[in-house]
Image (cartoon, rainbow, N blue to C red; front, side, top):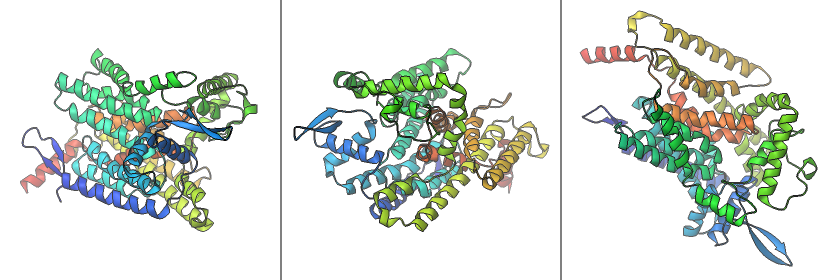
Length: 493
């Protein structure tokens, strides 16, 4: 099957609709089967997302419930972001508030995610490698299993990648009015992603990369404009919070909690339960409580900044060194379905796949940073500067991978950091990496940044797993000059 058609003019690649449909149907069917077979009651954060969706669907709005004098009292709520609950609520309103409906909604997101990865990869990679990127997301066992969870990460990833694709695709013509429209459209989509995962706001400046004039003011203005426009879909929700809560909150009231968890004296780098004796004993509302924890977190950092910084490796390790959240979530929901030997085996398998993906993605970042961006060199010229740097970094990544596998710490997180930095490395005389790639990598980079500041858990890398797949598909890219010469040779033959 031909994956990509070429337009007669301009050589612009068009996605293959048949491949997209097949990719969606496969991914959707597999995820729906897994969700129906393995899912139980929503637990942990998933309980609150489902709880909020049911309240929205039944007309109570985004609220929590308390019992007073034997009757239920509803209070406006925004501790968790509203976006995912609102998404589920739309399905609950249309089809009923059953777990089967939630499974279909999650499978739908899971089916669209590899398609969106393929489309965005097609703006940065060759058609064949874009196909590989989409297929990796469709087959990724962690993402497949995640369809059985009532969690936000797949929807957040889908919306962020859709924002990047809308921006890049719309700005292809380079006409100022088209670029401006593409930037506005992408920012609006990203604004919806912010309602699902507020950290998506950190990706907004990267939308300005579609403006070609880096050294002038235009791109900086575009970055600032993207940040402003991204807030447009968010502000009505912020206004609601200001009106019904005990104070204003941009999206949710868990940023202060998260900062405190990653900084207070009992911090370990991962989630720890905050207790009243830690601080914030006398608070009356959600916003006040979150601000109290935020101030407490800042004070903890000021008192012991070196200790807070020393926790960064642990935070990133908890985020990127393994993959076990989906198994533990499902085991919490249905303990009898996950005996210890099965739990350990599936955890180890998911972790093995994740670590391999991180390592290959780092190599993909090396290929894009140095081979694709080096000045064209003839195929017979031997090793130039770009190839030498690529080889050195490649050897370093392979060596670190072997070390991480052999050591007790299994520290794969440095490879994730390498993967999100290299596509932005400037090389004199070489062209910049395409905006589509840099935007995609921004999702990985902002994930690294956010969880270095707050705290880490392996569930948080799931939002960037499609980006790791995209980078993995870029591994060992041939130098442009060498590829052109091979294509010419094939043409002569």
